[in-house]
Image 1 (tube, one colour):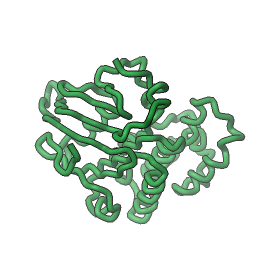
Image 2 (cartoon, helix red, strand yellow):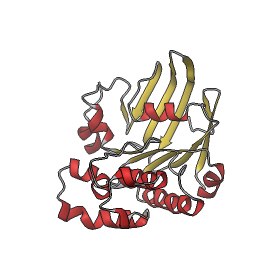
Image 3 (cartoon, helix red, strand yellow):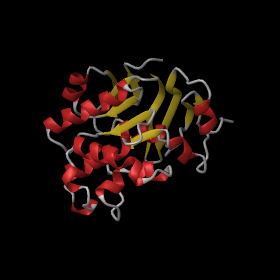
Image 4 (cartoon, one colour):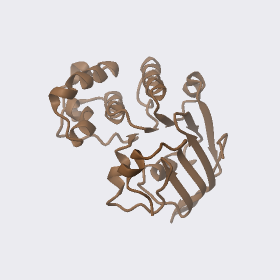
Length: 236
């Protein structure tokens, strides 16, 4: 049985942020999406996960965010086995992650500012203490002028940028991003890449799932290729 996320965080940091051992996963209508996947993401590493549409990139991220359980194999995060983590334990583990979902998952009743600040609010932070940091982040992603707007008034690209700002606002240990530049122009994609790189230099482990192979090449990050349910280019 794993330690609690809090106790795990207080112990000596693991050299590995992520380890998947012989992981298999699928759906009733599509078994074998992932097959015998072995993957190690060292602490502080930066990887791009590429592969054709339907290759299983989003399924792999669902396993890492603990939204799904593997059909076989083991998953470890931050040095702790989380294969059988319970729904009750899941939120505390996720507080150590920043996740960018393809469908954004913004809260429509909150302003752009409050969406970006959500992880800080959940941790009990006071607006006066984090306001300047949130404003700086919104400026970085080009949304300073929309701070008071509601998500329903944003374009797809603006929602994408807000989802990224929210995911990285608390400087998480692990950043998982599913097509984070899919709705933005090339100049903004490069700007967002620089944001991920800056957080990586501060110690975050970053895994970006993307179809944008040019961006992956420009990043200088290690490339993992998902094909036929297996990953090539992975440390194992």
